[in-house]
Image 1 (cartoon, rainbow, N blue to C red):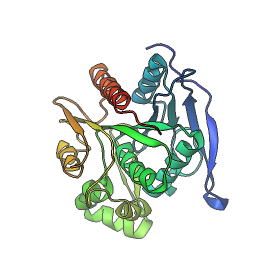
Image 2 (image 1 turned 60 degrees about the horizontal axis):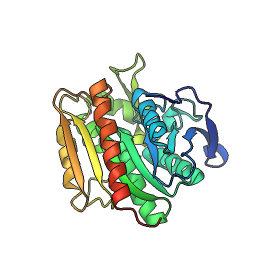
Image 3 (image 1 turned 90 degrees about the vertical axis):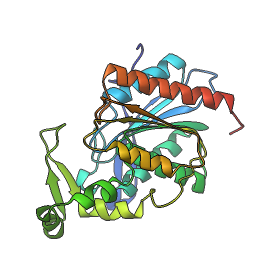
Image 4 (image 1 turned 30 degrees about the horizontal axis):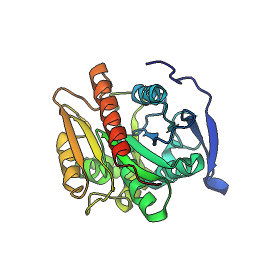
Amino acid sequence: MSDQMPNAQPQFLTVGEGEAARDIAIIVRPAQAGSDAPALVWLSGYRSDMSGTKAVELDGLAAELGLACIRLDYSGHGLSGGSFRDGTISRWLEESLAVIRHVAPDRVILVGSSMGGWIALRLAQELARQGGPKLVGMVLIAPAPDFTSELIEPNLKARERKSLAERGYFEERSQYSPEPNIYTRALIEDGRDNRVLDGIIETGCPVHILQGMKDADVPYAHAMKLVEHLPADDVVLTFIRDGDHRLSRPGDIALLLGAVKGIIHSAADMKVPA
């Protein structure tokens, strides 16, 4: 795909005040002149960043279609400042919301991968509550809403619980990096305050979920549970029988870009004044 921006120089936005201030890296592709189409917003997963394959391919699609594309690294990720161990869903949500408000598009399509799917769902709630850009669609890739309470806490081993109590965190081997995953007590406790699978989720827009059936990190039953909490929305759930958690193979990328195009067309058909 032409005109991608994998090496574009980021902007930095300071979020928070005092000791909580951190510089968040952003890469913004402007829309083609005269375009009133929604901006694409990329939301990465846990320990992922805006330079990954899916994020770059999404930016390439925006270039092809003349759309704006907004990518960011959460604090403690990629090019952003701040400590990873200070990270919580509330903190990363605050940063995502601040970036969207800073760029200030009229309409947005949220594209969230894994934990980014949780952030996207919380953003939908906050945009509805606080006002802001109109949310016209969501594409969620192996979404992991409430993963701390749904997927981590129930499976904690005794030594991990002990580490959380005594050290405030525990480590887990990562199959994607030589560095272990680190889960802090603050992340887990904050996750309880950001649960979305405890009632009906009303996004007010079409939602397309892509889920691998060989995902070892987020079981496909989790995607089915999410659908149950979206009874008021137009939801499409696509299972990839041999798909893993990353869904970064060429065929997976084609499905992702097709899903985003479908949401764009739906937004064009149902456009209302922002």
